Image 1 (tube, rainbow, N blue to C red):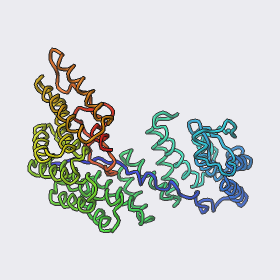
Image 2: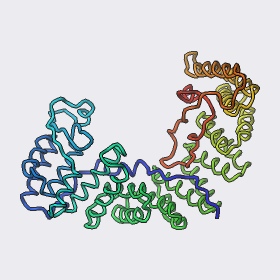
Image 3: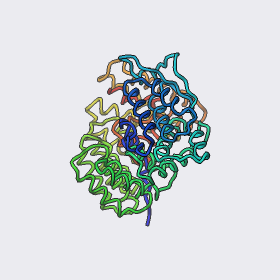
Image 4: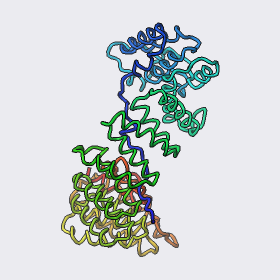
Length: 471
């Protein structure tokens, strides 16, 4: 069975941000702590609630100066991550007490000189506690998972240990906490993300199923289970999950990405009927977004269905009024498929339709100039590019003010291409490489070679010129 690995996993932003505004670690996680430990943690949290982060830290530090109390160490880790005004590699932290009207996030942008500094390396301290034979409460494993996840996100390989080791250690801590039912939606989200990064898909599936059972209202967990099952090649199990999500009235990111997972499953299983059904339903569900239609075009090109690809290209161009990002994305798909002829045919077809509209015609001719330059094999090709560039300039001059950046871009390209013509043997693609297209309507999970994010036609060096002109 031929596989079409068109879509790549991209853990969606919504799932990564789950729990960003989550309340403090549940008090139930400290239920087994001694009475005095619970009292000092509660007192510290009261100070934290008033913005007295330095006093809150000092209270915990005085109670357990040697970091031998696993519950207090866990609370210190959480406080250090959430309440620092500055930190050094997440192994030293600065704390302040906020005055009335002050905001911790604002102070972090410009930290004050006077801070209560603390050298605090949770990885070393938790390791020492475990080696000492002291009990390691589940909440400490939970907070260590959160800490190591943050280290990975902030520093990657630029920390004391490499990223792979950090991620694996975070997973192991989350595993220990989960074994004692110590978790939140945030920790399950982090754990699943790390397991997928480490390509431990079976483990990710178990965590995601746990998350779905615990937080059925969080549709992102269901979307990511569908994605994981796609990675495992269990496509028939993807469809029921996707269908359950898209049956809900919501039209947010989770619904959007559920369609993407359904499309992935259809493509990778070779089920053209299911693929088409999900694409068409996605287009109908999100009529104001062009990406679903670009996905339809991308799939048709990849499948070698020329008529369907042309129809999809013409439809999305018409619906979104020759949006430059749409034009750019369509051409990129054809270029990646090594079929520039189809791209030229599309531009010529569209130009004939919109020849009487200066803005639309200018956009199409501008991109045809870029296509000529991108695929140039002879000097004559660059001459065609220059001729189109001049026509685009004429068209745009009727709809844009003289100071519009499109004209600066056209002049720059004109100079560069003329210089290329003066060379003894002009080579293909002598114009500067174009910047990526506007991604504002890209879904949270996009095709592996996303519309508008592929090898672009050569063009403006700093931005999509026609996009800038229309803003």
